[in-house]
Length: 165
Image (cartoon, rainbow, N blue to C red; front, side, top):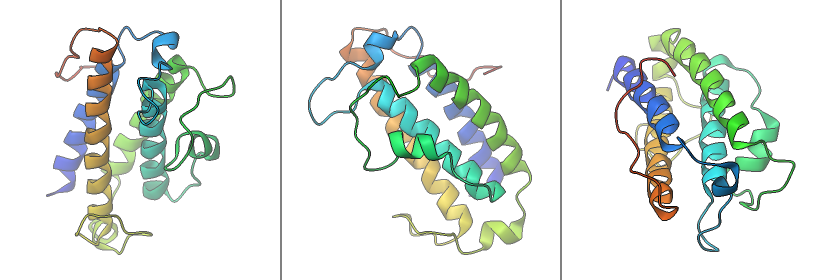
């Protein structure tokens, strides 16, 4: 897999995320379907946090500590007033997606083949493998958003790519 294919997957998933959240109200976004299922807002925040992490890795900048605390792996999915609104999460997603596009364009082959700062479950132990893992991670959670839409009686999300996100 090359970086162009990875960038194309991220671009598509940028659109899928936006489609998955179309016509979801703030109230619907915090609906708890079951004790062990994350609400839509938490999944959206978690995806945004993960993208922020990828950009942090690409640019050697600090992670967004608030998103990490609220939506990082192992965080609570109980929403309160301190969490950003769904609209703010969508705004932050669009912003970080633009940064991601630039960061992927600026990657060198040397960095792609380097050992990543941490290892995930993907067997490829390079920086490219780590970035690829995050694409898979996004797909998994976008699928959860798609199912959650159905649980609140929303139409099936569009699977196409947007021209402008």
